[in-house]
View: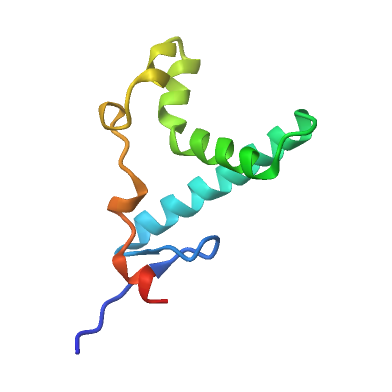
Length: 99
């Protein structure tokens, strides 16, 4: 039996093949949590799940959002691949299903 080193994200239990991807995922989740908190503080009556979905969307699309804020609003309308953003599923190891 081979031993495989994996890194586990404390926030959601996702597992990664390398430390860099795990840390990047953790930072994205932290940003999403902070965005969610901001939304919930400033928008009365927003559903918690909807707030979390918005927070995750904006955190995952942070590079496109930064481009939009710098004068290229069309960046938000481009798909993920053209923005150079990978889906999380490409980096999360399949071992997460074995927990």
